Image (cartoon, rainbow over all chains, first blue to last red; front, side, top):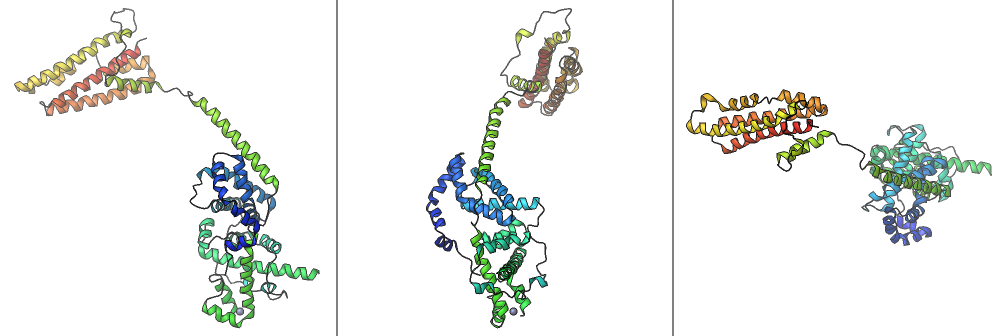
Length: 213
Length: 246
Ligand SMILES: [Zn+2]
């Protein structure tokens, strides 16, 4: 399955290109933020807030929680930025920190970070639904972002985590296994089930819309 | 491969590119549509990456929290200075320092505190005899060491065993460990355990040194070691005396 490269994203997102142009200043902002410069810290916030907040919102499907977690992630950034050594990209480091904040929150709420279902379970739920009467998603050529967003929010929490980490955030299965503490096989099967579930949800959504109009 | 098997295989090989997957997909429109849909879902997901803008109140709370954090850190830093002289060391600490420095000869006991004039009514009777006692001890040790080498030269020391002579000299002077400990515990009870420890170790030192001298009577090093052991003990008595004087 071909996953879009970052370059593709840059090409189609002028905002992102603009951000990359200011990339040179990020190192400086990081150094200044390490010294406690509030302006530099705010610059880092402005640059990364969308990505961090979107991650929090997708993982929790709850605005208030996402706001709290975004705040917590940036406060942790503020406390820990002096330990950032620049071996990894700052954004990678910050996103990983944010993922940990969210996972910690989910665990505190005793929500399943990963669904405990067996990977071998080939239930009826996993077979393609033929009774929607809706066209294949692929034939439509694209998926509306808001529909996908809504469908992700409707995923069971365990599926949601893996889908967001893999397909949205771009983590590999071995990284996910380390981050959430599951097997690579578990991560793969959860991702597959999440995508299957999303397909159902998207089709259902499309069928409902067709029924209304 | 049937439809269910194909779907299960997609968890491992997501794009359906394996030979048996391809064979099934060629003949099955349902599954081909499924694979296309899953590909589309996966590739659309990246659109969610920066989809949402946090409300301005998020930054407001961060700013407030950061300011509060800074204020707390400043408070901690400014309170820290109060810890500078907050603690008083136990008297044991100075005692150990004093013993070590005297052993190295770096400090001397304060002469002024030691009155050589006997005072009949003094409760410091013990302290008064301590001075001569310490002196006697050192003299006795000196005599012992000299006697010992002399005796060795004359090869007649087997019967007399000068070590016991030195000990009895000390005993005659009234210098014994129990007196010292009792006096210390009356005057400075906090120091008693420390003195008991010190006494025990200096006595062991003396025993070891004696053993060495007896085994190697001609060994200059062993004799010096024994002398030092006695000096250490004398110093301990001297210290106790200084401390128990007003
Ligand atoms: Zn099929």
